[in-house]
Length: 448
Image (cartoon, rainbow, N blue to C red; front, side):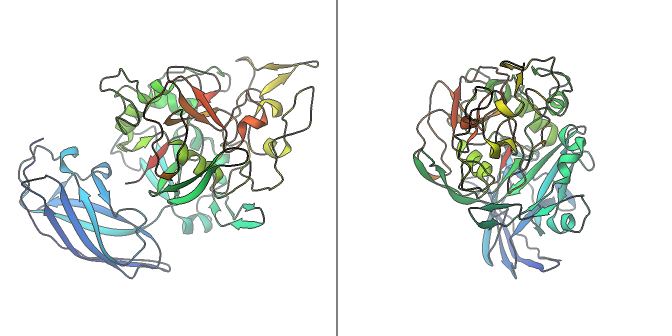
């Protein structure tokens, strides 16, 4: 890494007004920490903030554009909510200009933008293609530009969870096959566990994007160039990807480079699903969630056993067809053993096989009701791999979990399991090399 940009100064102001949203950037200064560091501090003043905004950064060396990818930036970029002085840090050593030498006329343009509600990534296109990434803003959604939507869909023990949810996304198979859709969710605090488990106070300090659906078989096929690994192969395209290991998704501890969360942080193997997805999209922060992030997104502001917010939604159910742990609340939220996961032969329940369509085994993603933040199938369908080693959770801010272990964490329950396994706080463990027909994944992006 030989970038030797000298200290430079720059200033730019930008103003944005979208409905009631208005924000102004001024007093921009750009300084490299050279010679002790190559990092570049971009300081700016934000004023007239009426709603949180994102800050879009573009770089120039004179009139020539400079590559300033999102993954090379950190600091006050996303969800900036207050007037005053803010700082963004650019690391040129991880950008395309690393070996361009001195950028003597480097400057930046900072543009405040409204916060998107959803992000759409077209997997049929490659990094840099026109319209590969699109954003859905709440005002556009509520004005009918993206189809059906609902407001405040969940009441948690009598209290409304305020949220706008794009329900039309579940009725268009393009968003389950050719395209990825992710929901923007702000940072926040909540209680992980409880309901018979130890309770942990969690504080997530960074905003995030979460996949609206579990990754489907067609999406995996597009990223992995034709690979079709799943067990439930009939009517496969919009059914969740399963039968792939944590190591297939991120890489293994004996990968080159080694992949071992949390020791190697967000590193993934180049040939893994996430490695190829990052290359294809140019989004280097795609990953699995930590289990603290996962439960935060599953609950979506609820404190009940399932994320419908119904206080009486206990997991203990009546005995149906000689099987317990059935639950009418869960039947509306996701596929599990007794609402179609297993097949009723008239005198006994059996596991579904690849000969069955999506009415048994896994369901087409988005077949059940979403949670308050518009995420589908966080209860049932397939267990979702999390970053963490399986160990005792701890309270705190952005916990990374155990430093080592033999198993990785899975969350959410599956088509194969009864209702008690599908509760919000339930934790499952599986060896990272295991490939199971009830384990899949949901994509996350943790914002800097």
